[in-house]
Amino acid sequence: MHTHTLLLLLLLKPGVCESCSLVVSPAGLVVKYGAPVSANCTSDTVTSMGWVPSQGESQVFRTGVKELTWRVDSLTDWNIKPQCFEMSEKGGQCARVLNVTVYKLPDRVSIRYLSHSGPVVEGHQYSLHCVVQNTAPIEHLRVTFFKVSTNGEQTVLYTQQLNNDIREPVNESFSLQFSPTSVDDRAQLCCSAMLDLGPQGPQPPPVMESECLNTTVHFAPEFSCSAKLQVREGEGLTCDVRGNPLPSVTWLRDGKMLTPPTHLSREDAGNYTLMALNRIGKANHTMEVEVLHDRAARGVFVCLCLCVCARVIN
Ligand SMILES: *[C@@H]1O[C@H](CO)[C@@H](O)[C@H](O)[C@H]1NC(C)=O
Ligand SMILES: *[C@@H]1O[C@H](CO)[C@@H](O)[C@H](O)[C@H]1NC(C)=O
Ligand SMILES: *[C@@H]1O[C@H](CO)[C@@H](O)[C@H](O)[C@H]1NC(C)=O
Ligand SMILES: *[C@@H]1O[C@H](CO)[C@@H](O)[C@H](O)[C@H]1NC(C)=O
Ligand SMILES: *[C@@H]1O[C@H](CO)[C@@H](O)[C@H](O)[C@H]1NC(C)=O
Ligand SMILES: *[C@@H]1O[C@H](CO)[C@@H](O)[C@H](O)[C@H]1NC(C)=O
Image (tube, rainbow, N blue to C red; front, side):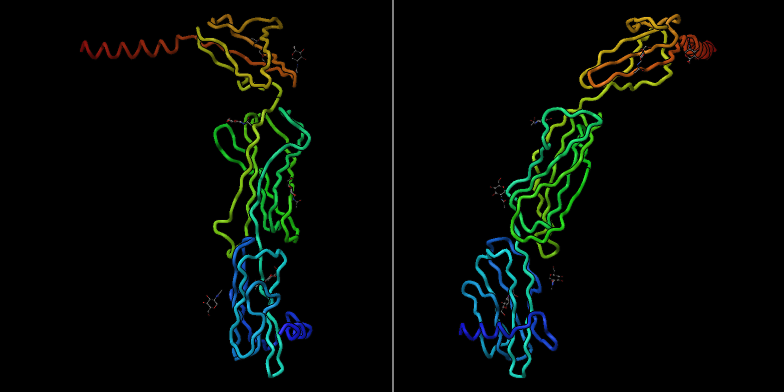
């Protein structure tokens, strides 16, 4: 039996199937490593057929059949390429290859900076690495770097897929050049790995996420008030300054330092300059402050009152 099969194998020309009636069902298989698997090979006519390589208990070769099943209880060969072959009396010989994709989900997905720890600085560039451990086949793996903002919003930064036909499990590192900006302060950086094996694979495609990196971004002071400010009489003067570390802020008016007035009077109108400084940088912001007199508002109020009073009297 065995030598017979070997002889047949020598005669086989894989992939040549002119007038080959063999049908392998299913045509392709996606199997988790270690899982059981089976496929059928059928022919139009009663014939002599076999499967190579055989594994476990499966029938290697049989004569006088129209169908032969290939069965493996636990598939542990990453490179398996089963073929069903036929030796017909009429002289035809052919083989059909069964596509088998053996997969394994990652043991672990993790994210880290390459040679960096602690806060990052705005405007600098950092290498972020997403390490996926012990997964196969790597060409079906899609790695996504994403950011979770402080308000919970997720943004995809980068998606990568490798072109590598290694079928055994590998450890793979994916990388992203990341240039943080001030809006990334306190955001989280994460990566996920999806094994997308197509319609024959598990649905939905399994996804594994890394733990996230809390990002502290150091950035120079930024002002969020406009260049022209209209403030009511009696109100205070404020301007939001962001920066990390917290910047020190100095107020200037006509070149003189002052503390920002908390109750503006009309004499306080004018041009103010703010100087903010932290160890990342410094910035100036000048604003023209106009102090609104309350008379306009009061005028409307008086009119309203007068009209209402007039009505009541009438
Ligand atoms: C088998 O796999 C090859 C390469 O991945 C592909 O080109 C071919 O279409 C597949 N055949 C079937 C029947 O799935
Ligand atoms: C193979 O054929 C047998 C019997 O004909 C059937 O029970 C089984 O479901 C088939 N298997 C596949 C994978 O098609
Ligand atoms: C992948 O990394 C793990 C942990 O570092 C290690 O134990 C394993 O041998 C590595 N596998 C391969 C295929 O390099
Ligand atoms: C990251 O921040 C979250 C909340 O903002 C916190 O729960 C978590 O412990 C932090 N992780 C690390 C590693 O500091
Ligand atoms: C403030 O600055 C603007 C623009 O430089 C200038 O036109 C204006 O006269 C200044 N106002 C005062 C009160 O100095
Ligand atoms: C900010 O203003 C001060 C005083 O006018 C000046 O000395 C300094 O160079 C300015 N800095 C920047 C960054 O513009």
